[in-house]
Image 1: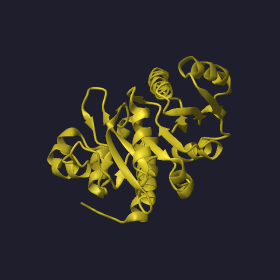
Image 2 (image 1 turned 90 degrees about the vertical axis):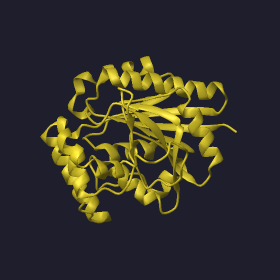
Image 3 (image 1 turned 60 degrees about the vertical axis):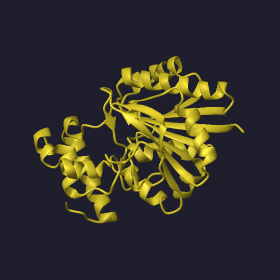
Image 4 (image 1 turned 45 degrees about the vertical axis):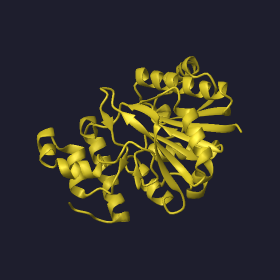
Length: 274
């Protein structure tokens, strides 16, 4: 039985080289699933949160997308920067199929990522969200599944130099679930949001991302709300490369957004100091 897939991708002055590689790898993975007759149709929605401030460059962006994406798509241009979560909601409200992928513009997917995700969703009807096995560009493991964060861990992860992090390696390893075996598991509490493969029914039921978060922690909030009724599946057979992270290196505005969202998150779900 074939399925329909919708994909949402939110950009804001995104690196065109990384976005090109994201679109190319995603397109190849989608086309392979279609060739194997596991995917009937795929529709991509790109939400450009920078469009309202960049009218001059907008006309070239659709041509850029069509050069590297080989299925149907639309480019949405909000009147203001909606942020990450609400940007995806903007796309999801317009197009949400039986399966929906939320992906970052700096994630490169394996050729088998889409077909393996579809098969796993078919075989595990209790799963509302699938999270992949991720690597950094240098080949190091990136731990997308997390335990509930303490204030100390959040500060260390966001801002501490490596020397300080080394002093708290045990706390960081626990947060990143580094001892978690590389096997399929439904014992996931929190999942990072660079690649979130949803059952469409799940997204509609929880009404997408919360408007409480402009940037950062919207993925953790969503996974905690979803856990009440649906399982999260960690799927090592679905592999991606992620060029993200490094909040402290992105400037004062990102640091401020991180701290603001962290404050909202821990006030919603509980304080854990160490």
